[in-house]
View 1 (cartoon, helix red, strand yellow):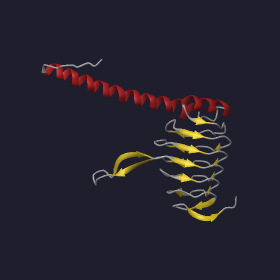
View 2: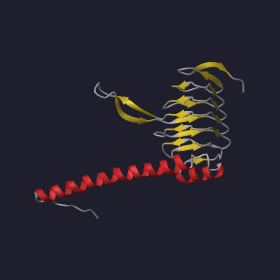
View 3: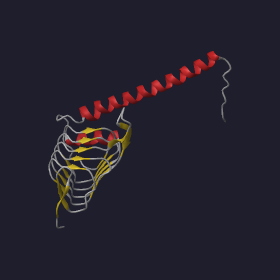
View 4: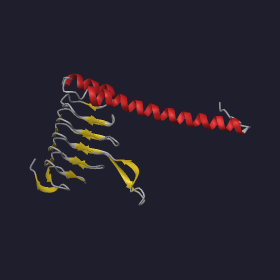
Length: 194
């Protein structure tokens, strides 16, 4: 059944437009409340060093983060719930999961302190505002990887199985499996044996 509303007078049109504007404002308010709730529960309470690993695991799972590991250290920030962390992986202190795009971390990975998974970027805009429309691109980390302290992984990057990314590196493009990568931007230093 469809409904057709006929607006006949200027005042009816004005009331309709005001209601539409109020609905948009309510949507914005609910989005902000959802972000506040996420930050309160996930990025404050669950991220606290007072919360045991097992309880943190349950809180993340309840929020929708798909983690199979309980080894997520305190202080991590999750910008959303589109994160998949496989079994046997260890996430060290204060890692940052931007989450404008999906983040997938394979089995048995070791993630150093303060690693940043940055999935958001922007199209290049006009000179008045160079940061144009926001983009969210996924990040995928293969199995058995070791990501050093303060590595930054940028949007759209896939890191193959068995890679090592040296501390402080900035990963701007994909990394083939079983390689040691270092630098800004991260480049292949040597191939690793399996």
